[in-house]
Image 1: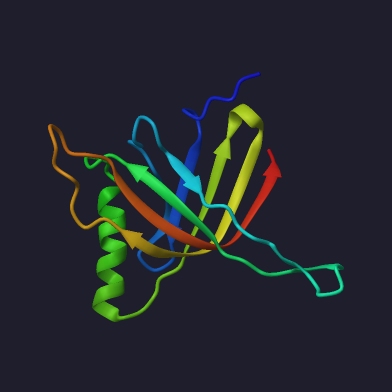
Image 2 (image 1 turned 180 degrees about the vertical axis):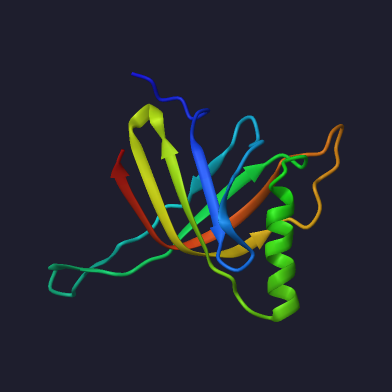
Length: 142
């Protein structure tokens, strides 16, 4: 079975800043993108020993790791600059296609929730992490 991630395609658009989807490139060698675990249920146990559970809506934080010479570094910087200049949030949408597993993920209403201002300088400039928090992440076969 092929589970490579090197042929994944990540397309990101931000309606009023980059309305045409941009392909993210120059990911870090050991980290492209990752989502945090989410908790879709509130689970507990009452004093009488009976379990209860209920669905709870959730957001999905995603970390994107690109090299400091990625052409898309400017995309993240311009996204933040627009937010700062206008004191408002600009939402993004994205698709991620992963051919090795035959899946496509549609990510909607994403907010830039964490950004690294300057790359860490060591022997060489280090990879930079950006976090987008998504309202919806929906998988589908392709």
